[in-house]
Length: 190
Ligand code: SF4
Image (cartoon, rainbow, N blue to C red):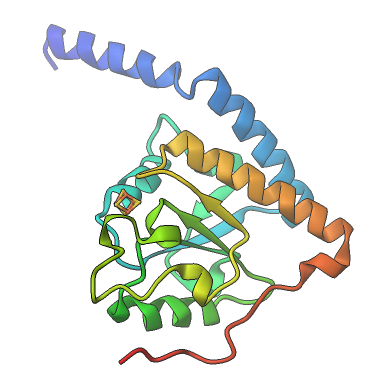
């Protein structure tokens, strides 16, 4: 490694070490405490892109980079819905993605929760007038928390997880609020 590369690498490492600005660390530690309190372990999340422009996925993917490193706060993205506690949905819900989205939800063991990220799942965003869009997500699933933004920044997504944990803690204190709307059947859209 050349001297210049070493210097640049060192600066980059220092930048990452400074990472996680104070506000991220404060939110992250609070998140970790809440996740431990409610789940006694990590919170597992399965992501479904129901028809997005991919910018929201990029922001969610950034949560796994060394700067945000979401796993240190007890939140882990998993590949199988069978391992998940939470379904996080991006995108406007296209007709092609409706069934995969609902089937993924169906395969998450109860109790399960839905978080939506980005404006598309709520309003359809720039795709709302397309013939292929059959959203919003709230037509089909009960949403615990909606994270606004186009796309939402990683720190906003961390705040969304915090809000979700607050709602969850309040719900468990008042058991009447723990019921969640389950789709009765998979809805087929022609
Ligand atoms: S909310 Fe914005 S960034 Fe996210 S999928 Fe929709 S258009 Fe793309």
